[in-house]
Amino acid sequence: MSSHPITQEGYDQLVEDYDRLKKVELPNVIRAIADARAHGDLKENAEYHAARERQSYVLTQISSIGDRIARSHIVKIDTSTTTVIIFGCKVRVRDLSDDSEEEYVLVGSSEADPGNNKISIASPIGKGLLGSKPGDVVEIETPRSMVKLKILSFT
Image (cartoon, rainbow, N blue to C red; front, top):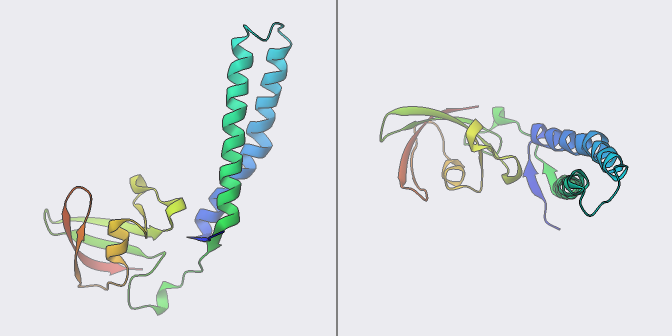
């Protein structure tokens, strides 16, 4: 079983999601199944079938998140002692093609959320930023195009 790097924040979120599914969602689904069962004939009971489908989804999520928790390796992040970009750093860059600035946080694959600028260290941009330092210009091949980024700062 291989471990996956994760920040403390990402790990805490996984545990919170797992607990919510087990303690809130699953009991609600079980109640919904019992209520639907009370309505009689199960063959034509849409509420029953929907509740069973929801139960399957919740159990799959519980299993998946439980596995991710078990394989997680929390990486203690101390960016104050490093001179290069490492896992967990918040990196400010300038895209040299349009002079726009962006800020990324480098995280593990299981907590990546590109919509919130949390990018995986396994992604092309994440790989390209690792080991760089302020002032460096990195060229990164992404699925859409070649990206040229200037590292402005990191914390």
